[in-house]
Each structure stands twice: as C-alpha cells, then as structure tokens.
Length: 195
Image (tube, helix red, strand yellow):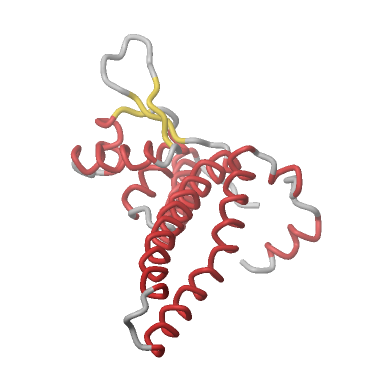
C-alpha cells in the first residue's frame, strides 16, 4: 500500500474522477451524445450541482457550448435544473442513479425510433398498396411492390417489440424481470480480469 501526502492523494482522486468522466463521455458518444456533453455529464456526476460559470471554469469550455450541452442533457432527462438558496444563477445536477439514467435515456430514444420508423412504414405501405391495386402497371412492378411491402411488414415485429421494451424500461418493469444486485464474487473476478 502506497503512502500518500495530501497533494499526491488529491491528484490521485482527481485522476480517478477524470478516468471515469472520460469513460462516460466516450460511452455517451457511442449513443449519439457529443463527447463534450458527455464530459459535462461526467463532471456534474462528481461535482454535484453546478452553474454554467462553474462548469466553464472547471472544463474551460465556452458558455454557449456549455449551455447547448446542458440543454441536450436536459432533453435526454439526465440533467435537471436545480435551485441553490441565495443564488440567482441556474444550477444543474446530473442524474446519479444509472438505472434511472438508463430508463430515461434509452426509453426515449427507442420510442423515437419506433415512432419514426412505424410512421415511415405506414406511409410507404400506403403508397405500395396503391401500386399493388393498380390495374395499369406491369406484373413485374406489382411483384416488386408486393416484395417491398412484405419486407416492411416483416420489420414491424421488431418495432412492436422495441415499443414494449421501451415501455417496460420506462415503467421499471424490466428491473423486475432482470433485477439488479451488487455484483457477485464471480462477476467481480471476471471484470477485474479484464483490466
């Protein structure tokens, strides 16, 4: 066990936080959130409620960039506006419960995917139905339209499944089916072996 002086310990703590902030930012980037917004989230995760000025001082980002990132995180429902007594400026805090984060972030994205794609499929199938019903087109084009219609029809079960999954995640029902618990000894050993 290494002995630390206060300054060394403080540096190690900050480095440990930076490692996790960087990991969170990279993970959020995988899901379409900008890396800078992910860095904002990670910083608020550790620092607690912060004003835009405090974020700017901590991260060295411009205030407009900060404001845009915070707004995007609010849209994903993973950052909330808070109130600090005696403070006129808005403060913001990151969702620290990763299960709630998961529920908010993914269920909204999945619902959007379902709605966009089912709406597009509905419109596409309406057009294809008109082509299929037409008496004046060649049989080969009618077959093409029927084939495309069926491909779209075959994709619907996925979207209905995703719709149910999003609803189960949003309601918390998924956590009854797949409960979360502290990691088992085997899970810890398996994950420690990866590092």
